[in-house]
Length: 291
Image: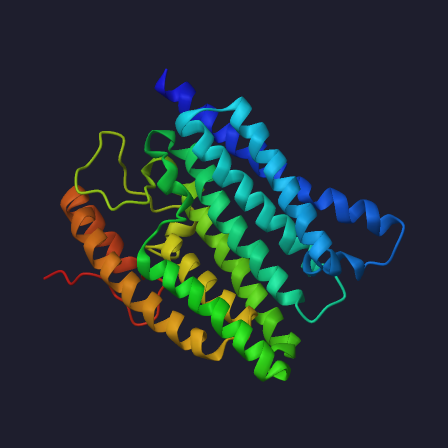
């Protein structure tokens, strides 16, 4: 029964994400009879903002009629991420200097939504609202807000800094590769993957050393590390590029050391031997020292 409920939550998230993505319908209809650059105007003009707000209100009302309690909370988050992804697509394909911010919106919303969806597929017993990682930590939220503030301020004061398309493309490649590596790690680990470091070994818990784990001991962290930095390279945010690099490096160094203590406790010599053969994948991070 519990498994069915968790599968339902995954399905609800997909439907809600697609409902949120339906925000694309209005500008696409208009674009059929007009110019592509109107799509961005749709987001910035008052009339367009009103239409988006009405559209979201109607969808939210529909979700309230269909779902209740915890399932509605899943639907609400899925819808929010779908709307964000849709708005990001509008900006990405519009003739505007904000194109790479559209890439960023798509990258951010896709990352958080697929964290939940992949967890629903590989490890439904650990699935919760926290699996979206939207409330990862106060530091994570502050980092995101800081990047938006920096982008806006620099866009207004030094607009030429935000027109380095080659740099944004480099960031996009980092984001795509990081995202791909992280999701590959999650799918390879299967039910062994959990967003929370485990201190007690489950009966089904095995040491995964195949696939991307044959190249990196912590491929999901490697992917997330380069994805996070890539989002700031994409936005051409020099201050946040440095800040994200330092903060992410410190976070993953501590996280890896904490996790490897548990892994050595779980798998003893098997993990120690694996640790000797395979690097963490992150620069200047070797993990917990073993005597």
